[in-house]
Length: 391
Image: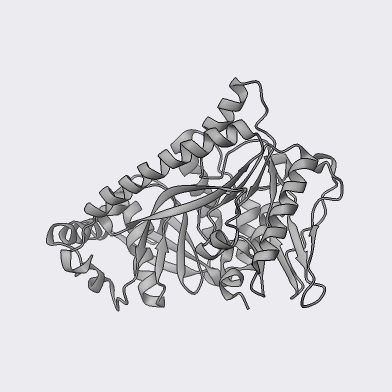
């Protein structure tokens, strides 16, 4: 059994279904699902089918309910036809602009990713390990869909190391990025983690946590099944407030999405809640599996010193330590994570570009970009707060 692919929360049927049912990832939002399902008819035969697309032109296809590999013999790869590049976190806007400037259409394009979720993980859900031949079948079928739909490209975002190797096809270009993850080195409590930091940064973390407490704020962890409807309602209000404050827009996800996952997959959800005078004032939402904690969304009713760091970093670290979770992925970007113990890691994506000239130009760009990413990771590692012996 491919345990990682089945436990990874964002590839679960319940998560992907909620994205579509809620109108968060659907045709109207520019994420038209054309998921591919591989059916193993026998030990040696495998057939690929499109679980959402019944016509060659996906834009004219009638949407049907997702079949997220319900059968034990099936594998499911999410695939979306898109007319924009929002919600991906692997930025190709410059590529789209270059196409436009040369009188070419970059959209539609195909994307294999978890919408609005820049978290590395498996990109095919299967109870049986995938073979190299099956992965090649998937690539062949995606390129067939690209031909049928007029897609300019296919983008395979944030794959796990295993799936990046299995999909290491010569037709695909490799791209690198960087995120910052915290690693649990068998700590028994938060102070064990602090003990690995140099004195100045250890004092900084303690001061930040003490300042939160000095404001009269206490923090609790609410497990998924125990999160009340009122807390979910507040969380969504704060989620929208965060987006409005950051860029003046609505959040990608609808309230119906959160309502649905609260009911269908609570066992992989936790929420850090900050309370002042017994009233909730801030929330941070986590997902988790047996090896990784994923910090996804946060919001607050106002400005409170260091509360973001407390809910989004320190409380998450404590939660991971308490459950023996090995890694904390606190989301994209955020170089301020480095001095708080989050280490730079290289992320990956794979890209098929139909136009030969643009493929060559993008390939050259990716070589230069990878060098810049490597230099950034080297510099970030020098900024880590750990004592020399603990790095």
